Image (cartoon, rainbow over all chains, first blue to last red; front, side, top):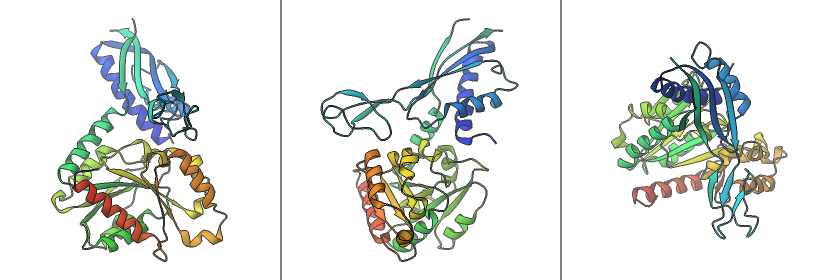
Length: 118
Length: 222
């Protein structure tokens, strides 16, 4: 059985990918790049596995899937410093207050696709 | 062929429908809760207790998420409040589209508080907003105090955590101290409730807090 969470995410990604491929008259997709934030709650291996299954019989079947991990960063609400955070590590290293706004790390985007036109 | 820039949010569809649901619920002044937890932690039992306490104080409706059965909806239905069942057919979380469809089966004019009971799962539901005002995570004593460390996103995204089955505390090695320390490091602003559906502990507090949140929303300050 496929991991459901990543499967539904990969299905949504494929909708976007196919939409762009159609708009650009691609007959074959050769490469797909996704950005995955460290704190987006998504397992890269599960996405790859889902992609292998979902892409069968589509123009993306042979495509290389590149997953770029995006580090989680936050801006301190007190001193304005920018620093890396994790799920359990959200204190500003300078003034030790709890993080203000998260800047990066929750991304889940289709960045680019490459392919050959029909 | 050069690369094509896409830069599209994969969860965009869910986020759009989430906003649409939220707008529809806001227009009717309905305070909405997304209730999440592992299977068997007591979401439905807490809900049953709340239904009894809220009777005559707020008009409650429930959307029940479940993989295959309508067992929970039947339990809620006995109490005579509106309930809609969503079966995900094996899907591990509810998404905004499912909730939009379920909302079509409710008389929104007759509801003050809507509780969406998510599929029992401590992982995926955290990633999908449904149109709710806030999320509540239920954790039961028998699951162990290590769960916030293992499933941080649920606690990160919740406004309140309900520690249920408190009547079993003495029979386990659950450390409340560790639990509060871990949750605090993930989300320092989270509100805590300690409940038991066997002896009623904490249900009044939870009920009052929910009514307060609903009143705040209806006063336009949420």
